[in-house]
Length: 431
Ligand code: DON
Image (cartoon, rainbow, N blue to C red; front, side, top):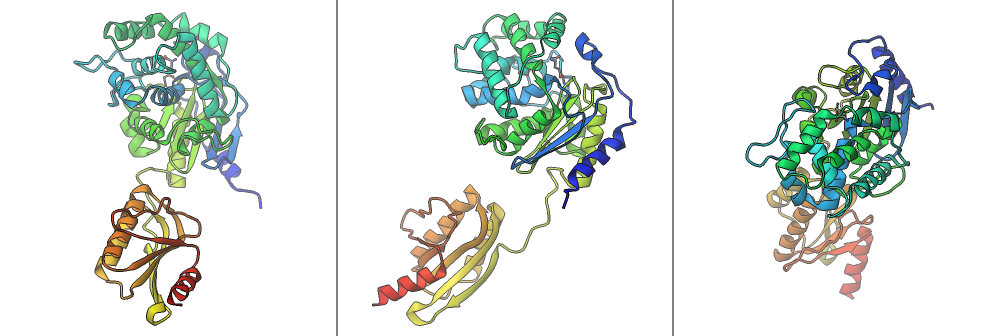
């Protein structure tokens, strides 16, 4: 069978093709020369399958889409405390280049507006890194997200740096507020280089998919940034990624996103996919007009809104039964699905409401797909309490979905692969 997804993406492009509203960015002269009719879309699943349609080979500058990735590198390199000390995480409701700082601290409000992004740029690499080392770190880091070597577009860089009066003003203010060290102009030069990196829509989809895949590039397998960094970055993208259009975006589209003035737009849907569009005409907020339309379409047609969850699946407790009799009797509680807080709570409730009748009990995870960290701790605490209540507890976990099964503090559990292992053990101990 041929997958219908490429056809769907083509159809989506056709539905927006005739919208010629908006303008290409002209405050960077080189961007005004872009072909305004270019149109492309790419989607990369969390496990690395890439679909793309339209002008997918056209390269364009990444611009502000570099911001979440550079913020990720700064968090990974310097840690949360140092970065949060310099850049806050509050939506500004302002345009991307607004001269706005937090009253009192002088910090930029978030790392998605230019002031915060220039600051994040200066926080990459080890403390004491030179501006050129920071630029190299950023090129290497963004290339790792994209899974290929990215290069700077010298013409776009030149065009922007010669007209970057506003960003220079921001950097001077940041220096005056003691938010950045070093020469403000060097920060603007580095930041402008970062914005001039050339990408295709496919690169952007893979970069977004790396965020959707907890920081591991799903094609190369490279761990690019740690999972807690990704959580922080996606949260900031969700609340601040679309600047003064962020609230409208989050309610209507509901995907952590970032736009760039060259016409790129990315969305990263945690655990599912990275999506990117490219169309250079922009609206008054500096976001791609046709990109916005495409994302609205994807959300409503593919159910991608972050706040929309599927209805709860079948109960996590699949059933209970007693196998064998007398001292060989084992009461098996079978669980199923992916267990996070709410399903673990359901297991605890079940064990409390309906007391177990046999001394030997086994919790079967044979049909469990995954156990989240909090669910793991809750299940282990249940096992500990069952032990203290006098039960001999087994865990049937052939695929080791529950890591490090130590209930601690008076609890005891034996991990086996099958229920026959339990019967064999019981028989052995009876002889
Ligand atoms: O700082 C600037 O003006 C550009 N290099 C990037 C701006 C940008 O992409 C805004 N996003 N939509």
